[in-house]
Image 1 (cartoon, helix red, strand yellow):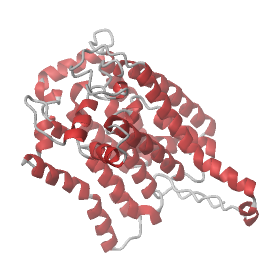
Image 2 (cartoon, helix red, strand yellow):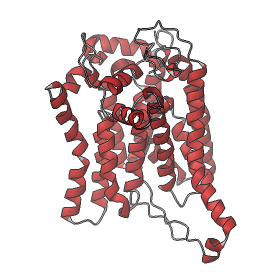
Image 3 (cartoon, helix red, strand yellow):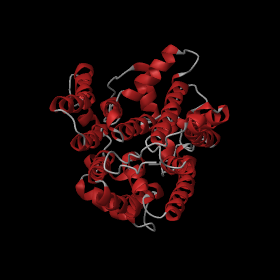
Image 4 (cartoon, one colour):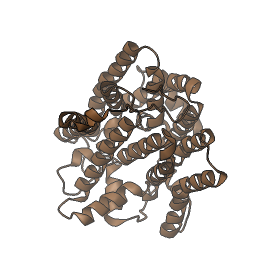
Length: 403
Protein backbone atom coordinates (compact mmCIF):
# COMPACT_ATOMS: atom_id res chain seq x y z
CA UNK A 1 0.00 0.00 0.00
CA UNK A 2 1.30 3.44 -0.85
CA UNK A 3 1.85 5.80 2.08
CA UNK A 4 -0.92 8.28 2.87
CA UNK A 5 -0.71 11.77 1.41
CA UNK A 6 -1.09 14.00 4.47
CA UNK A 7 -0.88 17.27 2.58
CA UNK A 8 -4.28 17.27 0.93
CA UNK A 9 -7.67 17.64 2.54
CA UNK A 10 -8.15 16.63 6.14
CA UNK A 11 -6.32 13.42 5.36
CA UNK A 12 -6.00 11.61 2.08
CA UNK A 13 -4.79 8.06 2.22
CA UNK A 14 -4.35 5.76 -0.71
CA UNK A 15 -7.06 3.11 -0.60
CA UNK A 16 -6.23 -0.55 -0.34
CA UNK A 17 -5.86 -2.16 -3.76
CA UNK A 18 -7.75 -5.45 -3.61
CA UNK A 19 -6.56 -8.29 -5.75
CA UNK A 20 -8.55 -9.81 -8.57
CA UNK A 21 -8.96 -12.95 -6.46
CA UNK A 22 -10.62 -10.92 -3.74
CA UNK A 23 -13.03 -9.41 -6.23
CA UNK A 24 -13.91 -12.84 -7.46
CA UNK A 25 -14.91 -14.11 -4.07
CA UNK A 26 -18.58 -13.74 -3.19
CA UNK A 27 -17.67 -14.01 0.49
CA UNK A 28 -15.27 -11.10 0.18
CA UNK A 29 -17.91 -9.07 -1.61
CA UNK A 30 -20.32 -9.66 1.24
CA UNK A 31 -17.64 -8.58 3.70
CA UNK A 32 -17.02 -5.43 1.65
CA UNK A 33 -20.75 -4.69 1.62
CA UNK A 34 -20.90 -5.15 5.38
CA UNK A 35 -18.00 -2.75 5.82
CA UNK A 36 -19.81 -0.15 3.75
CA UNK A 37 -22.99 -0.65 5.76
CA UNK A 38 -21.28 -0.48 9.15
CA UNK A 39 -21.00 3.35 9.32
CA UNK A 40 -24.66 3.70 8.34
CA UNK A 41 -25.67 1.18 10.99
CA UNK A 42 -23.57 3.00 13.60
CA UNK A 43 -25.25 6.32 12.81
CA UNK A 44 -28.70 4.74 12.74
CA UNK A 45 -28.06 3.23 16.18
CA UNK A 46 -27.12 6.62 17.64
CA UNK A 47 -30.19 8.20 16.04
CA UNK A 48 -32.42 5.45 17.45
CA UNK A 49 -30.99 5.87 20.96
CA UNK A 50 -31.30 9.66 20.95
CA UNK A 51 -34.79 9.74 19.46
CA UNK A 52 -35.99 6.87 21.63
CA UNK A 53 -34.76 8.49 24.84
CA UNK A 54 -36.31 11.84 23.89
CA UNK A 55 -39.69 10.19 23.30
CA UNK A 56 -39.52 8.08 26.46
CA UNK A 57 -38.67 11.15 28.56
CA UNK A 58 -41.10 13.53 26.86
CA UNK A 59 -43.29 14.21 29.90
CA UNK A 60 -43.24 18.03 29.85
CA UNK A 61 -42.16 20.09 32.82
CA UNK A 62 -43.22 23.18 30.85
CA UNK A 63 -46.84 24.19 30.29
CA UNK A 64 -48.37 23.88 26.84
CA UNK A 65 -47.96 27.08 24.87
CA UNK A 66 -44.76 28.13 26.63
CA UNK A 67 -41.46 28.48 24.79
CA UNK A 68 -39.98 25.37 26.38
CA UNK A 69 -42.97 23.18 25.52
CA UNK A 70 -42.34 23.82 21.84
CA UNK A 71 -44.65 22.45 19.19
CA UNK A 72 -48.29 22.38 20.31
CA UNK A 73 -49.77 20.49 17.34
CA UNK A 74 -51.04 16.94 17.41
CA UNK A 75 -48.08 14.54 17.30
CA UNK A 76 -46.51 11.76 19.31
CA UNK A 77 -43.06 13.26 18.70
CA UNK A 78 -43.27 16.18 21.15
CA UNK A 79 -40.07 15.11 22.88
CA UNK A 80 -38.13 16.00 19.72
CA UNK A 81 -39.90 19.32 19.04
CA UNK A 82 -39.22 21.32 22.18
CA UNK A 83 -38.12 24.96 22.17
CA UNK A 84 -37.10 26.07 18.65
CA UNK A 85 -38.67 22.97 17.14
CA UNK A 86 -41.97 24.86 17.25
CA UNK A 87 -40.54 27.59 15.04
CA UNK A 88 -39.21 25.17 12.45
CA UNK A 89 -42.55 23.34 12.41
CA UNK A 90 -44.45 26.61 11.99
CA UNK A 91 -42.25 27.61 9.05
CA UNK A 92 -42.65 24.16 7.49
CA UNK A 93 -46.44 24.36 7.82
CA UNK A 94 -47.18 28.01 7.08
CA UNK A 95 -44.01 29.51 5.63
CA UNK A 96 -42.38 32.66 6.94
CA UNK A 97 -45.02 34.86 8.55
CA UNK A 98 -44.14 37.82 10.75
CA UNK A 99 -45.45 37.63 14.30
CA UNK A 100 -46.16 40.16 17.01
CA UNK A 101 -43.36 40.68 19.53
CA UNK A 102 -39.60 40.52 19.36
CA UNK A 103 -39.36 36.88 18.23
CA UNK A 104 -39.54 36.46 14.45
CA UNK A 105 -39.30 33.35 12.25
CA UNK A 106 -36.68 34.93 9.98
CA UNK A 107 -34.04 33.98 12.56
CA UNK A 108 -34.35 30.38 11.30
CA UNK A 109 -32.84 29.48 7.96
CA UNK A 110 -35.00 27.81 5.29
CA UNK A 111 -33.34 24.53 4.28
CA UNK A 112 -34.56 22.25 7.06
CA UNK A 113 -38.22 23.40 7.17
CA UNK A 114 -38.33 23.37 3.35
CA UNK A 115 -37.13 19.75 3.19
CA UNK A 116 -39.49 18.69 5.98
CA UNK A 117 -42.39 20.32 4.15
CA UNK A 118 -41.28 18.82 0.83
CA UNK A 119 -41.06 15.29 2.23
CA UNK A 120 -44.50 15.70 3.82
CA UNK A 121 -45.89 16.81 0.46
CA UNK A 122 -44.27 13.84 -1.33
CA UNK A 123 -45.35 11.36 1.37
CA UNK A 124 -48.58 12.72 2.89
CA UNK A 125 -48.84 9.84 5.36
CA UNK A 126 -45.82 11.40 7.13
CA UNK A 127 -46.74 14.35 9.31
CA UNK A 128 -44.46 17.36 9.14
CA UNK A 129 -42.82 16.46 12.49
CA UNK A 130 -42.24 12.89 11.31
CA UNK A 131 -40.94 14.11 7.95
CA UNK A 132 -38.46 16.46 9.61
CA UNK A 133 -37.16 13.74 11.92
CA UNK A 134 -36.81 11.40 8.91
CA UNK A 135 -34.84 14.08 7.02
CA UNK A 136 -32.43 14.43 9.92
CA UNK A 137 -31.97 10.69 10.45
CA UNK A 138 -31.15 10.27 6.76
CA UNK A 139 -28.76 13.22 6.96
CA UNK A 140 -26.95 11.74 9.98
CA UNK A 141 -26.59 8.35 8.29
CA UNK A 142 -25.31 9.93 5.07
CA UNK A 143 -22.85 12.09 7.04
CA UNK A 144 -21.43 9.01 8.78
CA UNK A 145 -20.91 7.29 5.43
CA UNK A 146 -19.14 10.36 4.02
CA UNK A 147 -16.81 10.60 7.02
CA UNK A 148 -16.06 6.89 6.66
CA UNK A 149 -15.29 7.27 2.95
CA UNK A 150 -12.95 10.19 3.70
CA UNK A 151 -10.55 7.80 5.47
CA UNK A 152 -10.36 4.66 3.30
CA UNK A 153 -6.90 3.66 4.55
CA UNK A 154 -7.99 3.49 8.19
CA UNK A 155 -9.04 0.26 9.83
CA UNK A 156 -12.80 -0.15 9.91
CA UNK A 157 -12.79 -0.27 13.70
CA UNK A 158 -10.97 3.07 13.86
CA UNK A 159 -13.34 4.69 11.39
CA UNK A 160 -16.33 3.50 13.39
CA UNK A 161 -14.78 4.77 16.60
CA UNK A 162 -14.23 8.19 15.03
CA UNK A 163 -17.86 8.28 13.89
CA UNK A 164 -19.00 7.27 17.38
CA UNK A 165 -16.95 10.06 18.95
CA UNK A 166 -18.38 12.54 16.46
CA UNK A 167 -21.99 11.50 17.08
CA UNK A 168 -21.46 11.46 20.84
CA UNK A 169 -20.20 15.05 21.09
CA UNK A 170 -22.21 16.83 23.79
CA UNK A 171 -25.46 18.19 22.30
CA UNK A 172 -25.14 15.94 19.22
CA UNK A 173 -28.61 14.62 20.02
CA UNK A 174 -29.91 17.79 18.34
CA UNK A 175 -28.90 16.12 15.06
CA UNK A 176 -32.04 13.97 15.23
CA UNK A 177 -34.37 16.49 16.88
CA UNK A 178 -36.65 18.76 14.81
CA UNK A 179 -33.77 21.21 14.39
CA UNK A 180 -31.37 22.12 11.59
CA UNK A 181 -28.30 20.45 13.15
CA UNK A 182 -28.68 17.13 11.32
CA UNK A 183 -28.53 18.75 7.89
CA UNK A 184 -25.58 20.87 8.95
CA UNK A 185 -23.74 17.72 10.02
CA UNK A 186 -24.34 16.35 6.53
CA UNK A 187 -23.21 19.59 4.84
CA UNK A 188 -20.02 19.65 6.93
CA UNK A 189 -19.30 15.97 6.20
CA UNK A 190 -19.83 16.59 2.49
CA UNK A 191 -17.23 19.37 2.53
CA UNK A 192 -14.79 17.19 4.50
CA UNK A 193 -15.27 14.31 2.05
CA UNK A 194 -14.93 16.62 -0.96
CA UNK A 195 -11.69 18.34 0.05
CA UNK A 196 -10.09 15.02 1.06
CA UNK A 197 -9.41 14.08 -2.57
CA UNK A 198 -8.67 16.35 -5.56
CA UNK A 199 -11.08 14.54 -7.88
CA UNK A 200 -13.97 15.25 -5.49
CA UNK A 201 -13.36 18.96 -4.98
CA UNK A 202 -16.14 19.94 -7.38
CA UNK A 203 -18.63 18.57 -4.83
CA UNK A 204 -17.42 20.94 -2.12
CA UNK A 205 -19.55 23.93 -3.21
CA UNK A 206 -22.69 21.84 -2.71
CA UNK A 207 -21.74 21.28 0.92
CA UNK A 208 -21.08 24.99 1.46
CA UNK A 209 -24.37 25.94 -0.22
CA UNK A 210 -26.34 23.48 1.91
CA UNK A 211 -24.62 24.74 5.05
CA UNK A 212 -25.30 28.37 4.08
CA UNK A 213 -29.00 27.64 3.54
CA UNK A 214 -29.22 25.70 6.79
CA UNK A 215 -27.46 27.82 9.42
CA UNK A 216 -26.23 31.42 9.72
CA UNK A 217 -22.58 30.39 9.99
CA UNK A 218 -22.74 27.74 7.28
CA UNK A 219 -20.97 29.96 4.76
CA UNK A 220 -17.81 29.70 6.89
CA UNK A 221 -17.31 26.23 5.42
CA UNK A 222 -15.98 28.07 2.39
CA UNK A 223 -12.74 28.55 4.37
CA UNK A 224 -12.01 24.85 3.98
CA UNK A 225 -12.77 24.97 0.26
CA UNK A 226 -10.54 27.99 -0.37
CA UNK A 227 -7.71 26.33 1.57
CA UNK A 228 -8.11 23.18 -0.52
CA UNK A 229 -8.00 25.24 -3.72
CA UNK A 230 -4.68 26.72 -2.62
CA UNK A 231 -3.22 23.22 -2.21
CA UNK A 232 -4.53 21.88 -5.49
CA UNK A 233 -3.21 22.34 -8.99
CA UNK A 234 -6.21 24.00 -10.60
CA UNK A 235 -6.57 26.46 -13.42
CA UNK A 236 -7.64 29.97 -12.53
CA UNK A 237 -11.00 29.33 -14.15
CA UNK A 238 -11.58 26.17 -12.13
CA UNK A 239 -10.71 27.92 -8.89
CA UNK A 240 -12.96 30.85 -9.68
CA UNK A 241 -15.84 28.54 -10.61
CA UNK A 242 -15.60 26.48 -7.42
CA UNK A 243 -15.21 29.57 -5.23
CA UNK A 244 -18.13 31.36 -6.89
CA UNK A 245 -20.37 28.30 -6.68
CA UNK A 246 -19.60 28.03 -2.95
CA UNK A 247 -21.05 31.49 -2.37
CA UNK A 248 -24.41 30.80 -4.01
CA UNK A 249 -26.06 29.85 -0.74
CA UNK A 250 -24.84 32.99 1.02
CA UNK A 251 -26.31 35.01 -1.86
CA UNK A 252 -29.60 33.10 -1.98
CA UNK A 253 -30.51 33.70 1.68
CA UNK A 254 -30.67 37.54 1.54
CA UNK A 255 -32.48 37.33 -1.80
CA UNK A 256 -35.06 35.03 -0.22
CA UNK A 257 -35.50 37.31 2.79
CA UNK A 258 -35.80 40.35 0.56
CA UNK A 259 -38.62 38.65 -1.28
CA UNK A 260 -40.38 37.34 1.84
CA UNK A 261 -39.86 40.18 4.29
CA UNK A 262 -38.83 43.07 2.07
CA UNK A 263 -35.53 43.14 3.94
CA UNK A 264 -32.44 41.24 2.73
CA UNK A 265 -31.00 41.26 6.24
CA UNK A 266 -34.23 40.23 7.98
CA UNK A 267 -32.22 37.50 9.66
CA UNK A 268 -29.99 40.04 11.39
CA UNK A 269 -32.87 42.05 12.80
CA UNK A 270 -34.82 38.91 13.76
CA UNK A 271 -31.79 37.36 15.44
CA UNK A 272 -31.57 40.40 17.69
CA UNK A 273 -34.73 39.20 19.40
CA UNK A 274 -32.98 36.07 20.61
CA UNK A 275 -29.39 37.18 21.13
CA UNK A 276 -28.89 37.85 24.83
CA UNK A 277 -25.90 40.06 24.07
CA UNK A 278 -28.45 42.38 22.48
CA UNK A 279 -31.30 42.01 24.96
CA UNK A 280 -29.14 42.09 28.11
CA UNK A 281 -26.43 44.46 26.99
CA UNK A 282 -22.72 43.89 27.19
CA UNK A 283 -22.34 44.65 30.89
CA UNK A 284 -25.11 42.35 32.11
CA UNK A 285 -23.98 39.67 29.67
CA UNK A 286 -20.47 39.68 31.12
CA UNK A 287 -21.84 39.48 34.65
CA UNK A 288 -24.09 36.61 33.61
CA UNK A 289 -21.11 34.84 32.05
CA UNK A 290 -19.07 35.12 35.25
CA UNK A 291 -21.97 33.81 37.32
CA UNK A 292 -22.45 30.81 35.05
CA UNK A 293 -18.72 29.99 34.97
CA UNK A 294 -18.87 29.31 38.70
CA UNK A 295 -20.61 25.93 39.12
CA UNK A 296 -21.63 26.89 42.67
CA UNK A 297 -23.35 30.11 41.60
CA UNK A 298 -24.61 29.04 38.16
CA UNK A 299 -28.35 29.46 37.77
CA UNK A 300 -28.45 27.05 34.83
CA UNK A 301 -26.22 23.94 34.81
CA UNK A 302 -26.47 23.57 31.02
CA UNK A 303 -25.13 27.07 30.43
CA UNK A 304 -22.29 26.43 32.88
CA UNK A 305 -21.59 23.11 31.16
CA UNK A 306 -21.40 24.84 27.77
CA UNK A 307 -18.85 27.37 28.98
CA UNK A 308 -16.65 24.77 30.60
CA UNK A 309 -16.90 22.64 27.48
CA UNK A 310 -15.60 25.63 25.51
CA UNK A 311 -12.74 26.31 27.93
CA UNK A 312 -11.67 22.74 28.66
CA UNK A 313 -12.33 21.13 25.28
CA UNK A 314 -12.86 23.58 22.41
CA UNK A 315 -10.02 26.03 23.12
CA UNK A 316 -7.32 23.33 23.62
CA UNK A 317 -8.57 21.50 20.52
CA UNK A 318 -8.37 24.73 18.50
CA UNK A 319 -4.77 25.25 19.59
CA UNK A 320 -3.91 21.62 18.86
CA UNK A 321 -5.49 21.62 15.40
CA UNK A 322 -3.81 24.93 14.55
CA UNK A 323 -0.43 23.14 14.53
CA UNK A 324 -1.68 20.62 11.98
CA UNK A 325 -4.41 22.33 9.99
CA UNK A 326 -4.44 26.13 10.33
CA UNK A 327 -7.39 26.44 7.93
CA UNK A 328 -9.58 24.15 10.02
CA UNK A 329 -8.55 26.00 13.17
CA UNK A 330 -9.44 29.29 11.49
CA UNK A 331 -12.85 27.92 10.58
CA UNK A 332 -13.35 26.66 14.14
CA UNK A 333 -12.35 29.98 15.69
CA UNK A 334 -14.71 32.02 13.50
CA UNK A 335 -17.56 29.56 13.94
CA UNK A 336 -17.14 29.41 17.73
CA UNK A 337 -16.98 33.19 18.02
CA UNK A 338 -19.95 33.57 15.70
CA UNK A 339 -21.92 31.05 17.73
CA UNK A 340 -21.30 33.06 20.89
CA UNK A 341 -22.39 36.30 19.24
CA UNK A 342 -25.51 34.76 17.69
CA UNK A 343 -26.51 32.41 20.47
CA UNK A 344 -25.51 34.76 23.24
CA UNK A 345 -24.56 33.78 26.74
CA UNK A 346 -27.12 31.00 27.12
CA UNK A 347 -26.35 28.76 24.13
CA UNK A 348 -22.89 27.29 23.70
CA UNK A 349 -22.76 23.49 23.75
CA UNK A 350 -25.15 23.19 20.77
CA UNK A 351 -23.00 25.54 18.71
CA UNK A 352 -19.81 23.72 19.69
CA UNK A 353 -21.29 20.40 18.54
CA UNK A 354 -21.72 21.92 15.07
CA UNK A 355 -17.94 22.43 14.67
CA UNK A 356 -17.75 19.10 12.87
CA UNK A 357 -14.61 19.72 10.74
CA UNK A 358 -12.72 20.82 13.86
CA UNK A 359 -13.50 17.64 15.79
CA UNK A 360 -12.70 15.45 12.78
CA UNK A 361 -9.38 17.23 12.18
CA UNK A 362 -8.41 16.86 15.85
CA UNK A 363 -9.11 13.11 15.87
CA UNK A 364 -7.26 12.63 12.59
CA UNK A 365 -4.22 14.55 13.82
CA UNK A 366 -4.21 12.54 17.04
CA UNK A 367 -4.46 9.31 15.04
CA UNK A 368 -1.04 9.96 13.53
CA UNK A 369 0.58 9.29 16.88
CA UNK A 370 0.13 6.40 19.29
CA UNK A 371 -2.74 4.14 18.22
CA UNK A 372 -3.42 3.05 21.78
CA UNK A 373 -3.63 6.64 22.96
CA UNK A 374 -5.95 7.49 20.09
CA UNK A 375 -8.27 4.58 20.86
CA UNK A 376 -8.33 5.55 24.55
CA UNK A 377 -9.15 9.20 23.75
CA UNK A 378 -11.84 8.29 21.21
CA UNK A 379 -13.47 5.85 23.63
CA UNK A 380 -13.43 8.37 26.48
CA UNK A 381 -14.98 11.01 24.20
CA UNK A 382 -17.64 8.55 23.02
CA UNK A 383 -18.66 7.28 26.46
CA UNK A 384 -18.49 10.65 28.22
CA UNK A 385 -20.23 12.43 25.37
CA UNK A 386 -23.02 9.84 25.26
CA UNK A 387 -23.61 10.31 28.99
CA UNK A 388 -23.74 14.10 28.52
CA UNK A 389 -26.23 13.70 25.69
CA UNK A 390 -28.52 11.50 27.76
CA UNK A 391 -28.48 14.13 30.51
CA UNK A 392 -29.25 16.92 28.03
CA UNK A 393 -32.01 14.84 26.38
CA UNK A 394 -33.70 14.34 29.76
CA UNK A 395 -33.94 18.13 30.07
CA UNK A 396 -34.79 18.92 26.46
CA UNK A 397 -37.57 16.31 26.22
CA UNK A 398 -39.19 17.77 29.32
CA UNK A 399 -39.07 21.30 27.92
CA UNK A 400 -36.22 22.42 30.21
CA UNK A 401 -33.39 24.45 28.69
CA UNK A 402 -30.77 22.14 27.19
CA UNK A 403 -28.54 24.58 25.30
